[in-house]
Image (cartoon, rainbow, N blue to C red; front, side, top):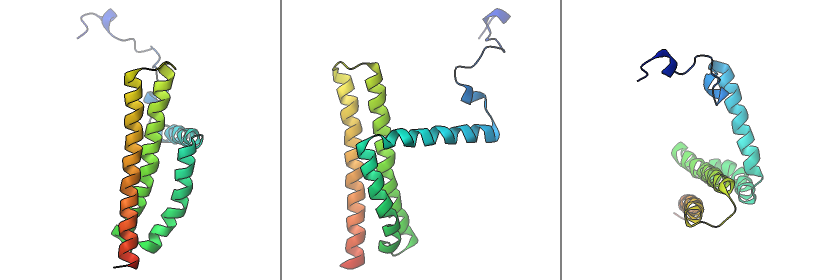
Length: 139
């Protein structure tokens, strides 16, 4: 706890992140802009583009394959989950690459775990879609 006024942070000191000072619609507007920038950055990744194109086909198909709102929701959710995990993996890779290009065991582990997360999300999505297709056409 600060013991004197000189130990306290200055009320006029600029914040490191101006987003923290925004409130209400201004904060929402800027946050939306950052999210759109993140999607644009993700689009620069081949894997994200491929998964997005697949999602564009799979999301409408979910309404045809799913027999209830729960099935449709689950099919849409696992499809979007793949995109979310891919964006997080890309973010991890970008942060690691910012540190430096040299090989390091911890950097490799972080990138490998991000890749494994993408793989698991794809396996989950594939399993849910296969089960839904089986239930719809063969059960």
